[in-house]
Image (cartoon, rainbow, N blue to C red; front, top):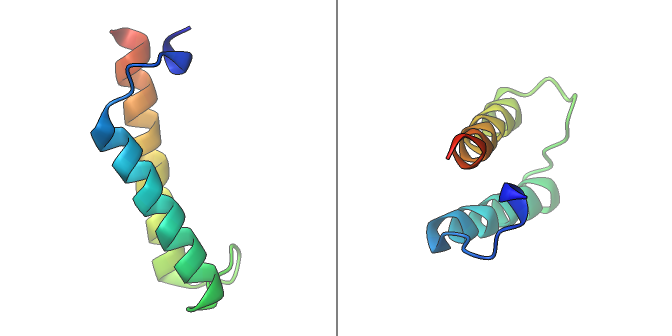
Length: 62
């Protein structure tokens, strides 16, 4: 299965770590919550989801 390959790019790993860090800091320090109606958390979530879809699509189509 393409999603379980062990040749994961270091760039993808670094991106995942960055997303996790932003999520933790956003929820703990900045008070971000889903459904709060705030623009920044929504934009971050949409951007991350878009990148995730692009990564999965690239791996599936490869």
